[in-house]
Image 1: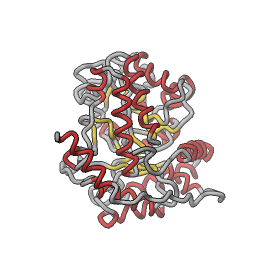
Image 2: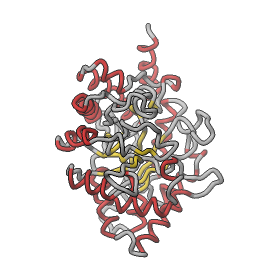
Image 3: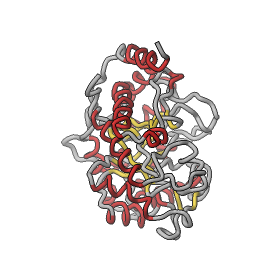
Image 4: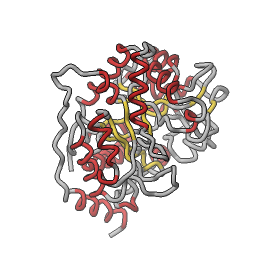
Length: 382
């Protein structure tokens, strides 16, 4: 029997050794929700550790900060070591059950599971093989894309994930793009193909009850640099055709959520990158394209942001831009700094100072609440 066939069988046996977790209760249901709870719901963070015992700080964030979401990684960029949250299928499932059990409300549990190189659940950990967006686009078989997506979503659902930060709706404009094309993350250079395969990918996930996120708005496919490493300027390379997949998918009501890109485009906003830009998030995504759902920031600990803006400016501009959930890859700094706590306190102060309105927080809270009402625990099919 081939390795390709053996791995899914082993995965299924291991994973079903652990029982399905019960849905989390929303502590805020039927009660007046305070500002701190709403702000906590607007944060999604990563953390260190294979289990709760290794990361008591995430328990504190869940219980005391009412954290809205967590994101799991397999690799620690700060140390350069493949030790973060993923060790085996059984371990991941148990970790997610523990996280949900400590949450005061339904918890978004997310992962970057695009397939191919951008895949936190790798074969070497005991997970099934996957195909990249690029490979699926080259085969150009929508049934194949749907079937592969459905299998991936079933893996996520069995483990307890309810949100996949995929598909990538970026067009492969620049074939030498270091963070999109070179990593085989785009379905195609054709807006039509990117749209069609993204829709098939989304449908495969919906079949298994897993939410998705279109990324990276308003398009990262024409960049020549990586926003993880530096400010990425697409002023001279970006064109409106990069909006086509987002626009079409939104019009079909298939976009569960959208993630912003840390790309700078002086033709759209002369001062701020997309994540911090009200002109882009509210003006283009919400008003022009009509998106009414939850908007995620890309990771605000990426160098495109931290090398150019302090935390207060980042939070002020990102929330006022129209972003609903702020992602940070770490809940603690290298010296143990309480990053989530600092985000909560800064946002509270900005609201009290009138720099962010309570109405703006309420808008995000209502959108997040609506998204969480769609969370389904456990797989639809096996």
